[in-house]
Image 1 (tube, rainbow, N blue to C red):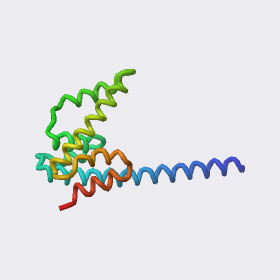
Image 2 (image 1 turned 120 degrees about the horizontal axis):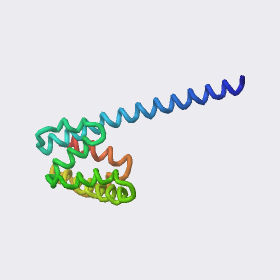
Image 3 (image 1 turned 45 degrees about the vertical axis):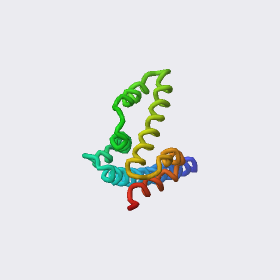
Length: 134
């Protein structure tokens, strides 16, 4: 009897934490999509609404604003190959930083912000400043 109550409480606590994580993730998704859509508008992109594509929308906006070549996307495909996928993933991560550097410069913000965006909470602040500062 006591074990049933304890397992029921544990399940309820886990469900509550999962719901909280879901709400926070949804809020961050909405914030980042709005921010990158605004950045896309500032960079005068044709389709800033691509920022709403889950997972890769902000990458697409950064890529388009940086006006770089498309071939680094092949590194993302290579990331799914066992063993060498780690190398491809690291190379793609470096290109993401370069894309963001050029994206920030395209909207007249300091490019070094892309390095500061590696700090977890600071990145949300910098994306918001870049998106909505006049």
